[in-house]
Image (cartoon, rainbow, N blue to C red; front, top):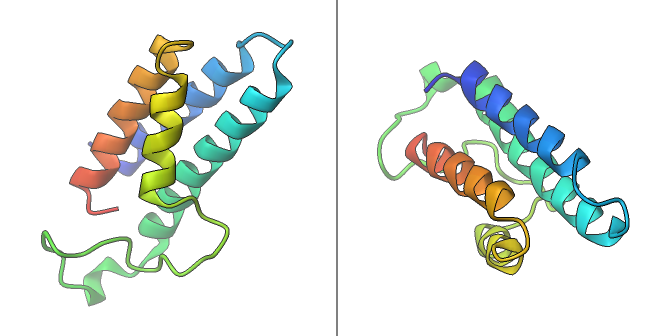
Length: 105
């Protein structure tokens, strides 16, 4: 999957979050922060000079040195938290996380 297709999937995630019940702004805020994190990871990966990197199964996000990023465990915990309430949203999140992981992000 290309970076562009993955970016479109993340944009779809934002649209899905925006369509959630407005009576729960805390959930929406947390989910938007998660989507922002995923988008930032993809952007950092896309901007990295991959020609200077040896891309293999051991390479993680090549420039993932920010402190404002949610860690993988936090992301997975959030997905588990919202799974019962928002199954479509969590399916989208799981798909995006799988795609990012397959890219080494």
